[in-house]
Each structure stands twice: as structure tokens, then as C-alpha cells.
Amino acid sequence: MIKALHLDQLDFNRGEKLLIPIGILFILSSFVTKSFCHLFEFPIDFTIWYCRMSPCDILGFLFIIITLYNFKVNRYTIPKVYKYLFLFLFLCVFSLINAENRNITFLALSIYLYGILLSLSFYNVFNSKKKLKLLVQLIFVFVTVLGLIGLYDLFANYNNLPNIFEPRVVYKDGKVHEVVRNHIRLGFRNASQLGSFFYFYSLILIPLVFARKKIINYRYILIPIFFLSIILTIVFVSYKVTAILSLLLSISIMLFFGRKMLDLKAMMLYLCTISTVTFIAFSINQEIRKQFDYKYRKRIVVWFKPDPTAKKSTDKFIIRNYGRAFRAFKTFPLTGVGLFNYKYYDKNEAHSTPLMLLSCTGILGTGGFIAVFFVFFRNFYRRIRAHTDEDSYFHYYYLVILLFIGSLPSWFYDINMRKREFWIVLAIMMILHSLSGVDSNKKYNIE
Image: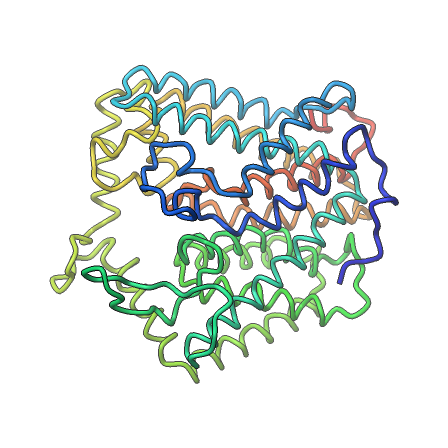
């Protein structure tokens, strides 16, 4: 699956012989999202920093520190998108002013700073064609292996076989009440994190296989198609509604706007394969049908329509969520109520990136966030104007951005800035921007 590409074939800057293995190990361990509190059975308190840290974050901090130490010597750069991310973070600092609990607001700011620095470090360390190829191929193989393990665990759940990762267990009165067999979690805290992880990495893996001008030419296209089918199957069996809907929307946008840049034969073969697998799964497994029906009723119907039989107060969830977020925003419209302080206004968090920013960081933080997206898509528009049709990296970059656009509606329900995989995918999109269609006109190059 991975072409013969050894580390000694790469062009290293100072410290990168150590940085690249650390970065790879970070990605390989990032599927274990259980914090140190969960792993060592400490009291769970998400206002404490080690209850927010996972084992992979030790590697992440080490990766950032070594990168920053070599920043000037290696002439690393800070693209304009990252400059605006730092501006966004600075504007979020003002949310400390009215925060009920400033300690957890400071913790939230630290988490976002960590994500930005991690993404910037990956951007600089892997910013060459050979390094990018190595990175995306390793991600492809790694996520595929995880998918195979997940499918085995799902099969094992239904056939009383030993699991590689323990299934979800529901306790009642201190005793095991139910073993949830139609869910898989791998090393994640819940199936929702699993779905987001596989979905975000699929944004960079789908074009890797289906771009008409590929950055990696596979001898047998059926092998990566099969691997990709495993990855996207995991997105579906995670039952994460936003990931599934975003995946379908992303593929639809790519097919409509990027069809000239797609290998349509391979794409049609893939669609036939995944459709057949999905049909067979629904036909032979009644539990899967029940779970999708349950998720549809719980996650979509009751958002807008009252359910008199619901045991929990989930009626009109989105309407209530939006209403309370706007009430919190009206309290302190300029600076917000403070990051991670929304719980003082509602027992549930603001289940939406725009709502969270509006209520917790006010006009300042929300304006900074909008500016980041404006600069990001302005760069994309400029690259479209400057590209050459023969550039395989532009084809890859263009298709990745189309898929990413399909993920934007999910931001109205999820808070993706807390996900490590989002920051890695952002770094890869920025690398593709810098490698694709660069011409002599400086105004089109990344700043």
C-alpha cells in the first residue's frame, strides 16, 4: 500500500529526523482519546488539565516544542491563515473578562492554542511533496487497520468472540446492566468521536484514490478502493448522524463541482462497492436497521418535533439550544460569557461551533473566527485562478476543499476545533495549498 519511500530519501531540515517519527507516532496514538483520568481511574473533573489530556498529547507537546526550537534555523513560516487563527485566539482572551470561572476559560484557550501550534508544526515539518506522500499514505494504512479492527470487534460483539477493544458497558446500581453490542469504540471515549475521526480523515483519503491526476499512482486501484470502503463503512456503523450526513453531502459536492478532476471509472466502481456493502449490511442485520431508526428519531425528529414518549427532555433540542445560546450572548454581547462557561447558563453545552463562539466569546471571538474562514477560502479562490491543469497537487487540493465544504453544516452541531484530527487535516490542506499550482505571481502564493 505504501510506496517504497524511506526516511533516508527525504530532505531533512535540522531536527526533522526526530520530528517526523514523533509526528507519525502522534497520529498513530491519537485514536486513544481517553484522558489520564479515564485511563488511571482518577476522579473525572474536566476543569483539571490532565482530565483533558490523552497519552498522544505528550507526543504532541514534544513535537511542538522541537518544532518551535528549530523554527528560525529551518526558516519555517506562518501562513496568513495561522496568523488569523492567532488573532482569533487573542480575541477569545477577552472572554476572560466576564467568565464565571476563569480557570476553565484559561484551560479552553490553552486547548485551542495547542491545536493551532500542532497544526502549524505539522504544516512546516511535512511541507514537501515526499513528506506529504509519506504522511497521507501512513494515515491511509493506519485508519484502514483501525477500521478492520473495528469491523472485527463489531462481528465479535454479535458472536460472543473475544474483543480487541472492550465494548461499551452500561452499569446500573454498580452492576453490569447491558453490554451494547451494536456499537464499537476502539480507543475512543464514545462512538461519536470514532465517527468524527474516520470522517475527517476520509476528507483527505477519498481524493487520494479518485483524483484523475493522482499524486500517488496505485498499480492495483481495487486495493485502495477496498481500503477506503472499510474506512467509510466505519463512519456509517459509528451511527454519528452529523458524520454520515456530512459524508453524503461532501461526496455529492465533489461529484457535482469536481467531476472533471475525478477518475470517474474508479469512482463509479467505488460507489457500487459501498452501496452493495451497505445493502447487504442492512439486509442481514436487523440491529443495524434498528439503530439507524433510533438515531433518526432521537437525533433528527425530536430536534424539531416534540416526542410525547421520550423519557428525557429532548423535545425541540435545536430550538432550545439556539434560544439559550442567544440569551447567553445578550448577557455579554461583546466578549461573551467565557469559554467553557456556558454550563452556568444551561446544563448542556452549546452544541454548535457558531453558537458556542457567539455565546462564549461574543462578537469579538465570532468575528475572528469568520475572518479565519474568509482568509482560508480567499486563498482557495486565488489558487483556482493561478493553477495549471497539469498539476496533480492542485487536483488533490481542489477535491479536498470540496469535501471540506461539505463538512461545514456539521459545524452547526459539532465543535470540531476540539478534535485533533481537524487540526491535522487543516495542516494537510495548507500544505496542499503551498504545493499546488505555485507560479511566479507572488500575490497568489501563500502568505
